[in-house]
Image (cartoon, rainbow, N blue to C red; front, side, top):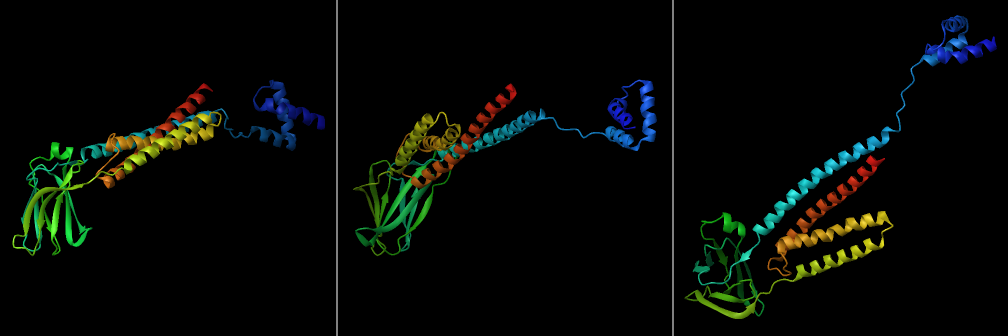
Amino acid sequence: MKNKCSIIRDLLPLYAENMVSDDTAAFVAEHLKSCEACRKEYEQIKKPKPIQKSNDAAPLQKLSHKLKLKRIQTIALTAVFVIALLVSAFAVLGAPIYQPYSEGIVTIEELGDKGLTLTFDKNVTDFHYDIHDDPDDSSICICDIEAWTTLWDKWFSQGKENLSATVVSEGKPMYLFYIPNDTSENVCLAKYDPSAENQIEIDGETKGITTLPRLVLGYYLILATGVLGIMVIVWLLTRKKQTVRLWVERIGLYPVAYIVSHCIVSGINWTTYSISRDFSLIIFLSILLYSGLLLAHNIWYLKKEIKTVNRL
């Protein structure tokens, strides 16, 4: 009996696939009617087997994931560079073009004992004034006045009314200086004394004082160039260490972004009369460009990996 069951069990796989002769099939079927153990074995063979995932699909799934990631990063890269382009346009078109001193660029009128009214020439589209005590005599105020226009205003904002402002002296005599921001001497426009009979005394003379530009942007540019040089040296010395080299490339992209941002905002100048505006724009634009360069760097490496998978 045992020998017969052994023979039947050897035939069961062929019997289940209808690959035996009619006589053998009848012989096996007859045996299964009377042998519960062989019948269970046959039922086990006939059960559908779960389909196992082929390992051959793994490279294709990996390739599909990389292609999707590359597509997303390409869209993000486009968005970042569009924003960077808009910020660059704002930096260039909105950069102050300081107006040199000329007679009539600022008209000064009395406002009783409260202060003065400043009215600017039509070429002036923006201005700023700062009131502070005279460092040599705290009983006197100094009012520094700057006036400028921009490329945007020149091209798109013509025909506006003359700008004006009210300057309050707080009861102290006040000297009004025009700051041309072109390395020429500041011009004393007038002296205002609220207690005098003639409150405004027009001056129009220089006093030997020059407002110099700030040099800090040049220092930051030198620092960024130095860091970039160090990154290049480290990159050349780590040819066999791909992980280290990858991180050096990623870090080294920021000084590149900063240098490009400096050139966009300030050109090749190392000096500026509007440090807060220029430095803020450089930092903001450099972060945008750095994000874009990182995305471009990742996309480039993804392309290399995709090519490698395709070759396999």
